[in-house]
Image (cartoon, rainbow, N blue to C red; front, side, top):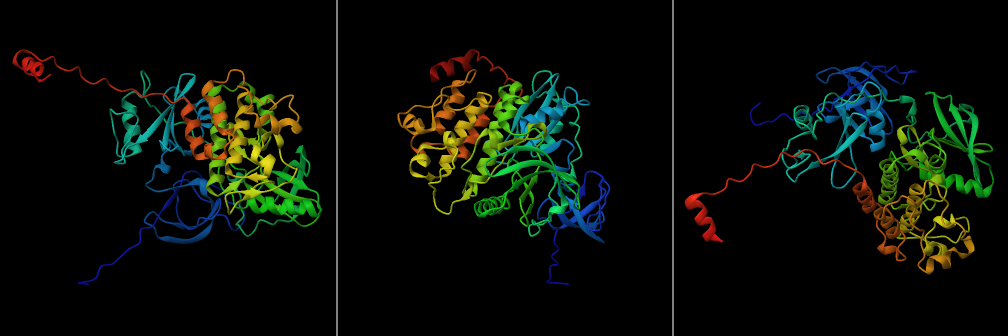
Length: 480
């Protein structure tokens, strides 16, 4: 057909990395290596069409867990690519049985100065390397070798050492994801009948609610956390605000909402269950008491990642504290308890409620009821002090009634034992009396990450310059 160009749309194919047995009529079962085309990528369960190797539809359509798939031809297909993963998670995975010296993984970073990190097992330790990218789009660990893509970089360091005596050998063993940890509901199906849930042991309680371990008997069997809120007018408002807020969140370092039950007394807020409990008890009595500086800074970094997401949405938390950060497997951290959280259309939110966490609240909020994104930064400084002191109560011996005057005199929390001056300096920046001079969470992300330990990769020394002789030496001498 002269004069005509036939346009074809490229089909984005997704390939499955594991087998999956679907339950019910809506979920598709599949084998590793099957192909799909996404119809709707909303939520953690994607609606897909099964296709053949060349992209033709087979007529089968259904829901599949998104984290079993990778887009064909992308880095997500690679056995060594682990996506979003914290340093602590990478260490725990690489130190598992079956991995040896040289076992490695590439993980995604949300840091401003680098997009990916390479983590490599070296005997009984794990070394981390920043994968940098130059203005031309090429990847490198150092200035001696540049690569057009991550594949070439990984191949190169199978042959050349990333540091003395350490080359890449085999990808870290990758656990199959757990589909039951995902929210199988679309956004308009949050409301569920209470009969779908079984309450288990109580995990904690507060002024308005109790939290239980529970079990969801619905379409997908899931262990969950269930917050029960006794029904009255005040609590109904709290319930509505918290659930409305949770429905808008989607970040790996923020607690995920699964379902709500607003019919009958009490109300239920059903969320993911994090098995290691809250950060405060984790630091005082749990594994956190034994964490080294690298592990503690990883926790701080994860909190800044979650709070930076809230900052980007113009959301304030207003109750950021160790007791409201939950810890899961591989020490994944999630900011929780959004009962006081608000979306602020302007630059601030005014509230004169007495129900505030006094010793975590910024002075301008205590005195004038003025909450901003920077008042959350103040709270993070107190949280960082909790992390570095392994759960010490802030301002011991200072009653709430005297705290505001204490702060207005310029007094601040002292440096925790075994805490570096650099980390204490970050706290003091968060506690600047002028909110505008406090860092943003975006800036804190970079600062916290720079305090973490990344190894310098091997750089081959440049060749020694040739010493000039004879006439050449005279010419160079005369030139100076």
